[in-house]
Length: 477
Image (cartoon, rainbow, N blue to C red):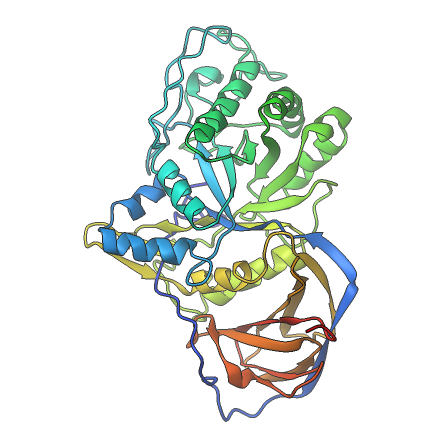
């Protein structure tokens, strides 16, 4: 999504160097609050975690590519590196065209009508795709192997309004009659062909989506689907995608609660549900803070706070919606309240007044980093694909706590202290390492936060901070 409205996210951008340093808490000398006890319930298993990611659509990858070689290398490390950077495990690509897009054109692989839905397609491929092919290859070099491609719209000639912008519907859907005929099958083949082009570039598209915010009409690339029409098209695209070995996702509604109707329509149709691999939703019109009514794994696939009022903001805790601590709280809610298996931020990099993780300025060959990147990295670096969320008890008001067990047996406890007082607690993690993110620490290892030995060390949680604890199961080496 690309928008500037209260429920939306203006195109985001932000970046800066991440360091992992030993040190002492900035609040040294602050009297701790009452001592508590955080107890992990390892028998309480919640969702599996597929990963964390962001979008590189609308040619935002080209901003990074067009930096000087030295700056480009630095920004790629910040946005992609497992140890120094944001450490994403998922990238979201944009499929399709927008000749009327006021931000940046998205390029179609079939920009002109081949002569009707049954005509031989005249696909075109430039091996660049607005910089996304290059960026995906850079990601692959760094071990990122999950790519989700999503279409904002079908080409305009496949729609009842004749343009890829301003909503409109796919010709041939129930209730949509067009003089040009039924384009449903042709659109399904178009989407799968996109994945085939990436495969010839050495990039496997794991999941493909046919709609972005089907319940929102935008002046740029957009296309409407009712819940019933979305379930209908899942049954058209499903067999085509399965034959090509690509997973099918739906429906990327512009609000999490607004996703309910789409989930219910697909769940009510056994054939549609059989073809669906993932259910996706965005977090603009309503936040991702409760589970969706579907048996499919759920991903939150787009959200960023609006930067319209805030402008470019690097602060961790300034009272703005674009603060790092605000993004950390949204990630926590998405995982711990909505039971989502993935959190996909809107943009990794962008320009100007943006809420992206990194801001790029090609005119001055420079970049800046926001605290949002460190909030994101605190989760993505340590909670890896294949982890499961486990139970945690004892968190009082003012602490947002979630816990995870990775496939290698390491355990991660994420604690956001939203209060203005330091809090001291024990936690049943064996020999935890503490990483602190707050107004003066950028995901830095801080040895002084943990004291005591054995199965229940004591951890001091600074005020208005995110503390990431990484340790082992008690009794394990």
